[in-house]
Amino acid sequence: MDVRGGSGVNRIAKRPVKTLFYVAAVLGIFLSTCSPANALPAFARKYGMPCSSCHEAWPKLSPFGQQFKDNGYQMGNDRDAPIFQQPAYWPVTFRITPIWHRESNDKTQVDGSNGVGGNEATVTTHGFDWSGLDFHTAGTLANNYSFYVLPSSDNTAAFHFESVWARIDNIGGSSWINVKLGKFELDNLLSEKRILTLTNVSGVYTNYHFQPVGEAYKFGIGDNQVGVEWMGHSKNDRTRISASLLSSSDGQPSVPNSRAYNGYFAASQAFEVGSLGLQRVGGFAYIGQAPTYFQFTNGGPTAGLPGTGIGNKGFQRYGLIGMWYVKKFDITTIFFHSHDSAYLGTNTPSGGPLNPTGALPTGAQAPTWNGGLFESHYNFNPQLILINRYELVRMSQQALSTNPGNLGNADVLTFGARYYPFISSRAGFAYHGEYAIIWQKGVSPVTATNQTTSSLLFGFDFAF
Image: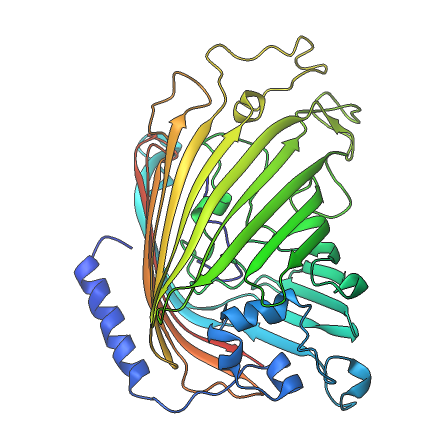
């Protein structure tokens, strides 16, 4: 199992004191180049506004930025429709991150005295590198017709479509009726696509992608999904609610596995607390299903014919979220609860030629787990943001009763900083420094013991 995932960057714990020295030294270099900060690229160019109108720290949205996004990237003025803009304007942003990074895993599978792949060793690598490329284009086709297309590549220039959607906004003049169709990010208040961390360990949210040890089906609540979304919000965006009907494909094209559908639901409410800032609380639920065997095969009992997956079994993800502000300091808290069918947890067909009776293995049970996230930021000034995050995952029931009770439990600690020497209406630039480490129980590849993986990264994150 791998709960770390990837985000275009090639995502350390043996020398923590030395690591802290590295972070402090590079952060000192960052701060020595201070100068005023202004705006962000594509939409800043369109509306002539400073980036701080929509971002607390690029790419993290402010409440106004969230409202602008919820309104279909519209301000409600004559600059919304492309027909009123200068012909030279092109709503495009390129983003890429040249980096230096260090990766360490204390139990990597290697050859040795126990034969091929029979040993474990600490492997540490480091060097200069670069992230993948994001090519954002988004905006309005006409008043109340919005779009977003994101071709994205890994660092070998292998492209895929991360997002492709169109949206009809304010149907019937109501902010409560907005319909989106295509491949899009789920309505997660804590957006993984606007995450402020970049390492292999913390370039994604662990709880968004965690699955118990041994599960074969793939799903992540942080993955962009394919379907249709209804979203509604009050005029001031304090109240938000959404519901999505999604293909059970985890965002993959051409419905490759099954003909099933999933549902995602989210709602939140914001409120002011004196001079502290705008607070928000909410909840979300993902009710899904995944196939366990194929109706038709082509080439043998395990060679399923794409699109004919059946024997669907359910999985659920639930969460409660709070986004709390105390002036320059904010912290996001999330409680997660997840549950998978015993068939999915043990990779057991619920019928078909390999298991015609649909019997479960002895000791099989539905894997269940809980998780928590605490992510804090301190906006020292408009140019500097300090980042800290702690995530934990705890299994409450394993897929097999014979498994150790703590198998797969994870703890992830991250801290870092981003400094913006400038952000103009033409481009954005950030110095980025980050250290992240994950401890997992019983997942080492040979001895099934605890494993520690860590990452240290410094880079130039820029968009144009």
